[in-house]
Image 1 (spheres, rainbow, N blue to C red):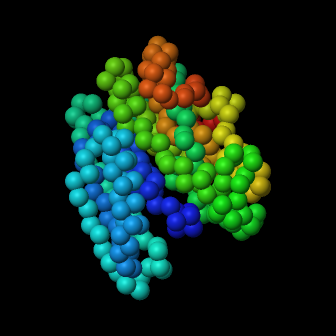
Image 2 (cartoon, rainbow, N blue to C red):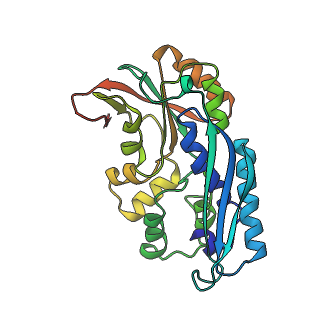
Image 3 (cartoon, rainbow, N blue to C red):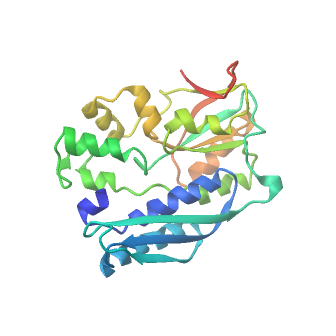
Length: 277
């Protein structure tokens, strides 16, 4: 919807690829190839070209092949200049190397890798705050963000595929969590064994300006922020305490900004959970 409002379509494909490859890399899978589906009421060549260009750039960043896709015209189904976009990626990981969280133990450390911004989650709430509550226009300049609201909201999702594989090949990674819808609250427990909790220190990193700005202007409670947005952490890596320093060095060498955000603790709950310090 933001891309439609801005008339800018060359980054949305990066988001599409990112949300797919980031979801398979948490299992240790290397993305091999990607296919897309683009549907419009009437084919607009310039828009379609921009969308596919973004998909190609995302695949280049993830080092996977864009091998094809489907383009459909569906008159009367979409508004003028709007479209639907979907895609999927196929990846490969050897059975013995699948990362499923089974090796996680109490005391293991959690490293947070910074996000590039909102990524692709929480945009219904974002649009409500920006365009309903605040009444902004898509080209409104927001001084706290240093750019227009449209530019901020179209910042592409960060692709972590190559970064994660750079540490997988050199050290043991026990668990990975891609922080998407559900935030830290819901995504980290999916990889934890029973009777384990992720203890997260919310003071261990500074939320990027866009999250603080949205929380303040939308009067959003902290719990809802943590459940809706990544709040500045796009990927979480779980390693042994002895590997924390090395993992941090490798990630930083790949250009990532990382934070020691917490550790694994014992929990008497029947299902894994997240606790905040």
